[in-house]
Length: 260
Image 1 (tube, rainbow, N blue to C red):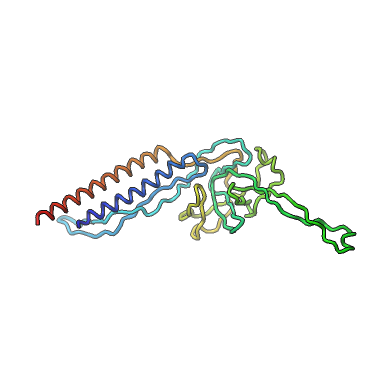
Image 2: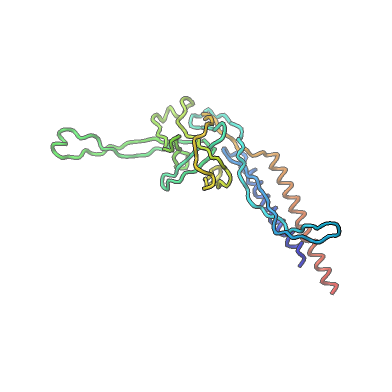
């Protein structure tokens, strides 16, 4: 079988994967905090052919190496809701899973309040101390800032944010002490859900960012719809050309076989 058949078949498959990336960007164009992904390709194995004037390189196609998030800041959308926050500059909100302790990062700042029920033992009276009686526990309600999925939003020190006045927090006024964390290197951050990210070892340790917190705003997706549609058309055309080349290679092979 001619090598061109395999090269074109691989190319068609990779263009299909590229199309999936751009289609996903378009599907999330209205999701707050979404980071569009940018596909990058790498060359597969190549060798050198002898030619008349100079040597020519012959490759075996290319593949989709990765689709990295685009970290450029998106536009702000005013909501006039006190629990909505956007980051003006570099950095991420940090959210922690209370069950696993795992910390994730996001630019999506549509937060909610989470009510945590607990118990506290009041100070015993002198009579109770004399009798050795333990006071009955009193139920308590503590409100924490959450990302809506049951994870704590962290402050600048990396601790969950407890909300003293849940009613006042719903209106734009004094912003809560939400931490904004940044990394020296964004390369390799892994996607989690629609707009979440997980840091890896090479990102380094998070540090407090000097970006500004905007209350009553949300950052919309940074997907450029016109650019994504252009890339979709390019991927479709490339896919069609690859399929046509596969058909041509197959016809050439059939013709050669019939000559025997």
